[in-house]
Image (tube, rainbow, N blue to C red; front, side, top):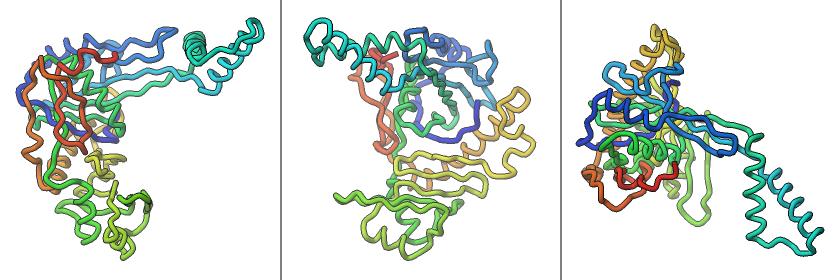
Amino acid sequence: MSVFKNVIVYRIEPAWSQTLTEAEEGLGKQRFVPCGPSQEKSAGWVPPRGEEHGPLVESIGGQWLAEYMVESKTLPASVVRRKVEERAAQIEATTGRKPGKKEKKELKEDITRELLPMAFTRHARIAVWLDATGRRLVVNSSNQARADEVVTALVKSLDGFAVAALHTQMEPAAAMAGWLASQEAPAGFSIDRDCELRSTDESKSVVRYAKHALDIDEVRQHIADGKRPTRLAMTWDSRVSFELTEGLQLRKVVFLDGVFEGGGGGNAKEDGFDADAAIATGELGRLVPDLLDALGGESAIGTLESARPRETAKTAESPAAHGATATAAEIENAPF
């Protein structure tokens, strides 16, 4: 398991409660199996410690850690397109007719199946942290769609499991604008040297600052003109640096010098796994509540609904959307 480099946080449904053994059994029903020769994608749970037959859930200091694996095969679109055109030309030459859209689509599907055994294979490992005490789920991803895929897999694996996106009193974009305009970061945080500002009008203009001082009149003028911060680099307690996004995600998370001293240096090897996991979850376990406080705290609107098996399916929203609930009902027809 790698140290968390990106953070998407969900609130865990209060009613969910399972033992470690029950969670292990649940994840075991979706254990990762590599793609077959003609299979485009496979996904499932793998041992977070990296041991071939190790447990799928590790408990470190009461914090549960898991890891989700996605294997996908990629074919260059140009190669598939060329093969389709060659096959279509052969049909036209032998029959005198030009294949239509439907037939070309079928040709593309056939050629894709033929080429898949030779396709490039990609692997993505997504670390997952279940904080039962804080009732938070943390997914190590910067991709909201991928994080929602992991959530769906958890809902399928863990009986009664449900989550909601966090909802704060202040929108992150509004809070970041205030911090930049006043040059006063919230208590415990400092503003670093990277940000992105985006116009809300039809122009959709974007201004980016990289490794640049942000306490300048130009930045304040952009905000006064109506540009909204979409991301802002910050540091918490001189221990963790990150970029806060308008969607309440933490990206480019870096644990600063000294944080991992004596803890294994951030390597997910057997001799350092427990220490690194304990340090990472301990730091993030304090950072996230402080950040939520800086945004005015969680809003009552974000209170979770109870999971009801016959409830109409809902699509899990991003943290920016605030307040979605993912339950077992919504994954009956999940794609995997």
